[in-house]
Length: 360
Image (spheres, rainbow, N blue to C red):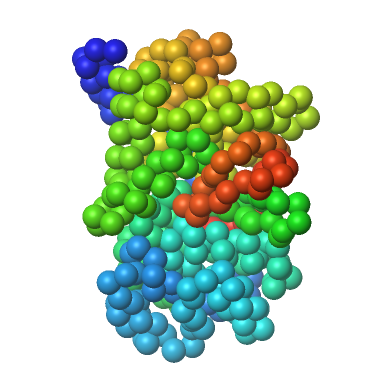
């Protein structure tokens, strides 16, 4: 593939869409606009702080200063999923009804697992997600705007005195059964094949050098796409996966990329989902050695079908309620890495219910 083809494709991806495309995108954004949150009882906020998340590694001084000004707010420091589960039980005992998560995607995943599986609350309270992770992909879609301390300060002032207007977004949650003999885990984004390989590369190479924010995984994905386009896929190892979507018969293919998402927006604003079914989870996959990659990529990354992004050329996207994945390898759920069992039981991904997120 010539370099000018790659540059042209990247240029197309970065440019604004046509008038028709912009109108479609604006329509999607309007339909996903948060509803105004109306409190029906006094608001009691509980804050989970993970001091080891990417954005908190320089310290929690600014966040602690905000909390000191609001001594009535319950807050706990958490390092492990067990810490998160124990803290949420304590919050439920104190009748907390807004949970703020000051941690990365892994901390949010631990909170979702505790809330949805262990169910310490009679009804799951709305979550307020701060941008405190290395990537913060979940926060980019459903989190509070601004820095950790700015967002937390606005949240507490609103909860105590009604300052500002708060919206609420609803999202499904992925319920992932990795092993039938273990408890399920809950999260927002699952990736396999090159996504899993890319996360490993990011942790091993880029993260150690201090790369942070959305540009770090974006750079990783760009490097992998460039490798695929210029080396015919030899640099990124395809993974053989048997995929069963809802009630359809499972099919085995070699994939370069596979993702299942409850999020509408990924890092850098990407929305690589173009399924049209009236279901809640987004599934997108790219077969090994896809055809017309650079012609298909710009539209597909914005969630728009084009004449090249079809199963015939190796591109798949559907909205689903359940996906079964049978393969020997690994996957990532919200940045945490998992290995499939040696018995090759399918990894079952389902709609695990709905969770509400505050926007302020």
